[in-house]
Image (cartoon, rainbow, N blue to C red; front, top):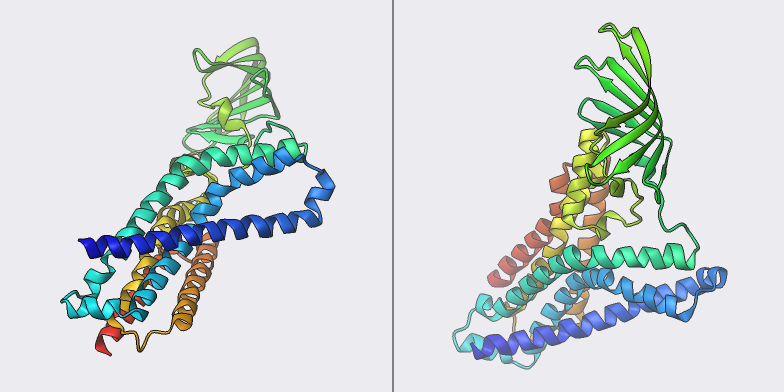
Length: 362
């Protein structure tokens, strides 16, 4: 047990060091890039710049966890091999799997941490990041109506509106088409405006014109009303534009977007791929940590630090290349969403198994 924590301590030490280095490089390169055009154009205050980078850190941390896990596992085992400690452990009867167990446990903990950051931290900080960047620095509007919400389908209702007053919670130019099972119109409700009632969760429409249709789709008759209460099942909060990208949303929010899109007849393929990637990506920290297991089969004579670290970088680059490639294919419809999201993890896991088999054979 003492050896387990001895190896785990080294692993954690290199994870922390790699994370600090990655975060520093992320911020440094982004800052250098923004000094060319972005900062001279908008001239933000130092306080806003600091807030912007502070809110970016959780997303960068999530992206850096697999890199840190990969390098930490390789460097830990390489250094143990170079100091003959792996040879001593093997002589004491410890197999490669037992030697590499701390790496697997550490990678699993990092995967759990990544899930927590992705679900609890990033959705919150991303809201603040876009508010600081888009509103306070670039001078955009604090609240905007999302363009895709102007057309919605709720069961047999097709809803369209021209504009939405956020402060008054009032829709302007509301049109509701109620269709039959044959998709022919049953009636059309046209209202000048409609105000949301949060207590009863209904919309009170004004200046109404209702057109009724026969079953063959021809007009039956038309009537006018001054007011009408309609239940649209439309939440005003869902009408607002969300500036976040799918990777900045939680899995629950992505599922809600998929459900709303499918109910309204919208194409949700890209969101379904993003959801599978969201599920699979945190597990990459565990999968790449297993690469260090291969060095449990090697002695100090066959282990070269530079070549091992280069191999780790090659595997890491391969992971992100494969992930982005299959993700693009999934969004084009060439691959099922589940395969597009999980293929990169299984690809790296296959490499780990193959290298372990070859190292054990040699």
